[in-house]
Image (cartoon, rainbow, N blue to C red):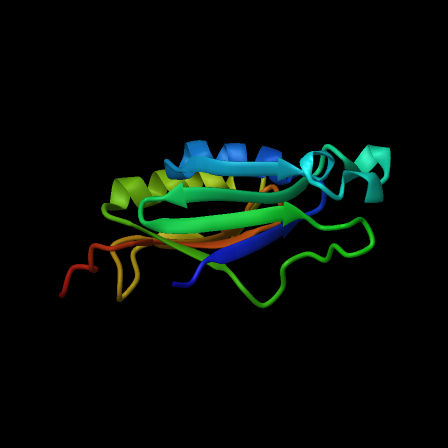
Length: 138
């Protein structure tokens, strides 16, 4: 089994609440640094940050945490890929993920899909959104 693990710059909980709504997921686990057995090893201002979070989206798992302040770097050279069963589903997901973010490839028909697009969301996570329905042959 392969799962994506995303690091955030202090806004993991906010991002996962957004992903839960946008992707139709269910947050199964959230532990802050302050709730962990190691809570005394973290500064007070860091105790409400996410140590580990897990969400189910269909049969898949998305996980994440807040990186320590000196350990965060924006994702580079990767994308989280999501496939939707219909073009309207894919386009809705793309529009929600790209809102207040940056579109790197507009949602459009491609030679392999009836709808595909790429964006970096407002949390800095790069996404590829693909419709599982093939492009019309012609």
